[in-house]
Image (cartoon, rainbow, N blue to C red; front, side, top):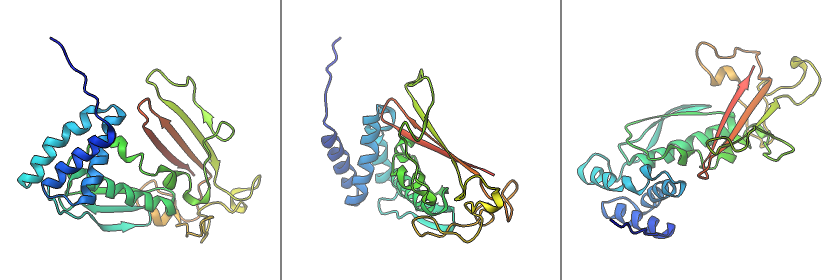
Length: 242
């Protein structure tokens, strides 16, 4: 039994997905966004979460499982968090809206959490970590991260057995070096602004509940890691140490 390999250009695949979604009532801009999510997954090599999902998405849109005209919106929010109601729109559109909301929050607060309700399947999770990560993780708080050999540490072996390349950066979150924390003008130590002129919220205003910093505590260290995968995926993890 012979098998024929068919090569489909990325632009043609996006056009096909876009046109199919538009045919069941999705707006042109939304169809374009959804097509990018699915086609990018195939380009990553994650074929289980690419165009293979299109027939199911079409059935949901046609049968009422998802609303073609659904409009995700933020229904509750704080300085570094938000809750999004997906309005039963297509899951990938809600995913993009939620990630864009998180990026906007993180650009001023340095970190963000966004929860979603009334949603559905959102395809490849790796797609969302590629949505302008530079905005949320390299420009936050005005302390810009450089991923060069001189400014970051490469974790060995590189790449690892799974094909991942990992780098990390450790930053002291204070403007004055070699002095005690209370005199170092550290991030969150008062009503400060970052280098982009945005107000920096105090940690007790951002984090609520057990284990959160209390008034007067300041983060001393920010640790950021970047993992580049074998399929051109990039993911970031960031943590503060108090």
